[in-house]
Length: 341
Ligand code: SAM
Picture: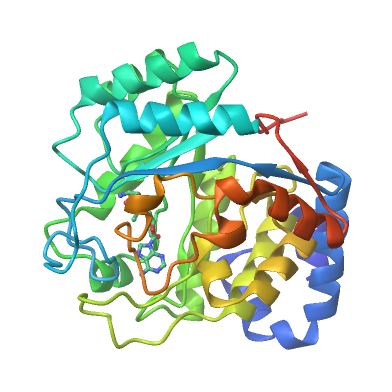
């Protein structure tokens, strides 16, 4: 652990050793991550408005509630006006950054998304736009970037090839996903990647490989959250990932990437409010309240019992401010760009 603190990096074997022996260093890890987060973010939490633009998806990831072959999903695709209305509402609330997330929906044409990106920038030219719409070709990403998209989230899910194909059908290509991540960096997107903690078949060795991969990628954002089983998927009876392990890894990531934007994710909040608060206290500096039209929110059901009302909802921002305020943190409404200074 001392070596990690000094060098901000470890080898795969060292990460594995650290994770296996985490109980012996837990307090130090929490304390160090907390000090680093305070130093770089000064107890400020950036909020992003999350708009779930479509739950249609051509992929069939075994873990995901909106996978193509889940017949129990009430499919929707927000119209351009629904998305822009959500952005307008969010802008009135003070949000300066929005995450447009969705399945890999062929019905959403590239030109539609480009038009939406340009329109968001006319609502407020200062608004930062993050896309999370799955794998796209270089030329398409370039068009998104030129239209004004600033950031892109694409979790690598797992670096280990064998594990990747325990989570995804053979028709999906891990090589392609990793290529897209490199393309995003090349195109100057603030790039986010990450994993689910406790996804079926995941070993501690796999997590160590993921951490080494993230060191190579040097993402500006890292999103990790516990796996939660989803009804109607091959993994519906699997156990959820550990919230303790999630927060431990968030702390390790904070030490590795002091300036990165790291959210306390919805899946963590879904499993435990207590551990979501610990994530905020020790390592996370981002929160993403849900801004999807309320009548669609429950249809974007990646997993069971998704938290998306109460303080997880953008319309309840004041309550979120109060809650985080009571923990000693201030919700700030700036763009919250990655700053490498
Ligand atoms: N389709 C895009 C993609 O693949 O990047 C974005 C949407 S995808 C649903 C967003 C993220 O949700 C995935 O990267 C995955 O890690 C997470 N996710 C999906 N199913 C989950 C589950 N059952 N538990 C926790 N997280 C899940």
